[in-house]
Each structure stands twice: as C-alpha cells, then as structure tokens.
Image (spheres, rainbow, N blue to C red):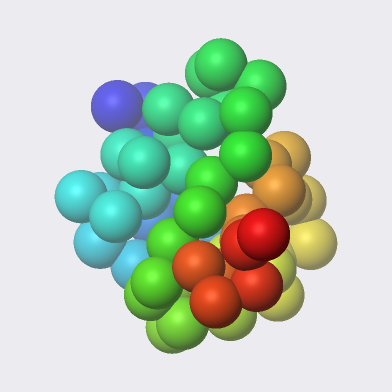
Length: 59
C-alpha cells in the first residue's frame, strides 16, 4: 500500500486505482486499463515504473 499511496499522491489519483499500478510494479508486469484519465495522469508522471496500456490499444 505504501507504493500505491505514493503514486496516488504524485499523480492525483485514488489509492484504489493506484493499487493496480502498484501490483503491476511489484510483479514487474504491464497494466492494462480502460481508464483514460488514469492512463494520462500516470504516463505524464516522469518516474513511470510500469508500462500502462489503454485497453483500446491492447492487441
């Protein structure tokens, strides 16, 4: 939860949403989402540790 809270505070998203990012980070995976706002806020964040993919772009 520490990682999720840190990310939430840095990108202005909810801790709930950032737990998914933190989980992907923990397992060194990718995060696929249909939440465009979350995608944009996280990808603008300069210290992105996880590859986030919009569902529409996933193939």
